[in-house]
Length: 112
Image (spheres, rainbow, N blue to C red):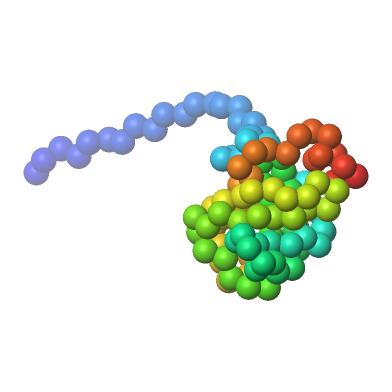
């Protein structure tokens, strides 16, 4: 009968701190509730709601579906037109990345 090997247990101690990073985001998001307009150029403007905002992008609730990769013009209050690319879309919600990040002054004006 073969000899049974004895399992050894090893114990160790560690300190764990929660990560407070931004994940894949470049800047923190701020919750907002802003009426805005979205268009793909020309006269096709539709209303949407901006539900969170960062200097680099926004999450939108839309009334018409958007497609991933589409370039849009987002008209933000107090700032005007911003070119943005749809990076994800799901039914009537979408995440966009601004072609040119909002300046600190523009971001503060919108979120004040």
